[in-house]
Image 1 (cartoon, rainbow, N blue to C red):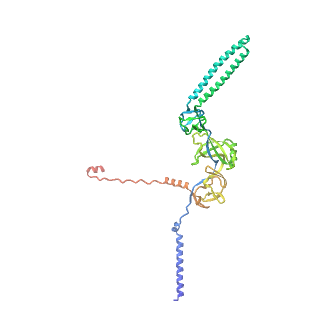
Image 2: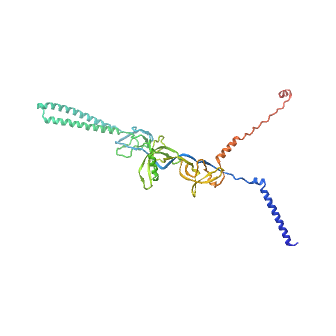
Image 3: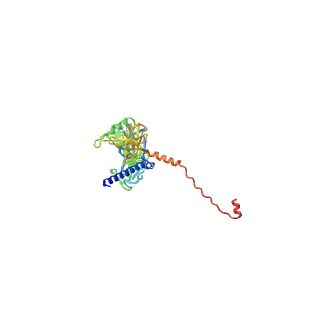
Length: 413
């Protein structure tokens, strides 16, 4: 046998073995066991929401500062020793409440002296009037000269004028005496005491005794970009504009009030306009000097088509969303977006009411991906668990106690 015939026979053998192997592989792939080994594609769990129509309030938001309506530094208006402080730091006071007392004795003495001076001058006036009447009766009989009568008339008028001066002195002394009682000029809350009892206070001093701040009502001054001025003016033209103050941390609404005014000029350095809103502050949630976010209700969009903010994605061609079709696959849908407020985005084109959109796990999706609603799946699993029959309770074996004798046989029977 030559080498060439041996090589040809080996080649034929190898070819036959390869054909048999390929046939076995093909048969294996088409058997039920191979089909069972293939894992079906699992749908992606997502959260979905339906596009629906709703009323959406449109807010304009700016940074603001809480300011008291009135802030008064209470100072002494007369000199003297501060005898006592009648308030507690941080106390709520009303207009006319006593805050402090200055030693009233010097002013009391001045007042009594002025009253006594007036009583003396009243007596002088009474006597001068009597003399004037006598001289007037004697003048026709030439028993009193005309000069004497005129002089007496002038004296009466002079003393009468002096009585007016005395009354003015009394009024001034009474006022100075009242100033020794320092009372609150407004309703508000006291701050930290600035001076202690026993110190000498002066009317010329500017330090003060305490600062009283009005808390109810209270105002908030905030800014908005000048581009939003027209929207605020349109809202004011329609009636009172609601303003809500929101905590900068947590987003909790602190209080609600109304817009009071728009400043008469725009700040050219920042391109913003200042606005002022008034709040009742019934629960003292707003504090002077506090930084808050002010939200102005510019308008309310009625019957607007909305979807959750989480359903809107931003791509190279603009906003889009994943829409779930009837066969549980998704498609990419370009959107025309108007505004967003309270977690909802207003859609002007691209969706129809009732269509379902994906709100989570968008990074795992592509056009044609199979999805299922995770909330629906969880509810189905819970329903299945409730519907499953309970396992039968195990029956405890009955213990048989052997008995002997007649008594035992009688018990068994």
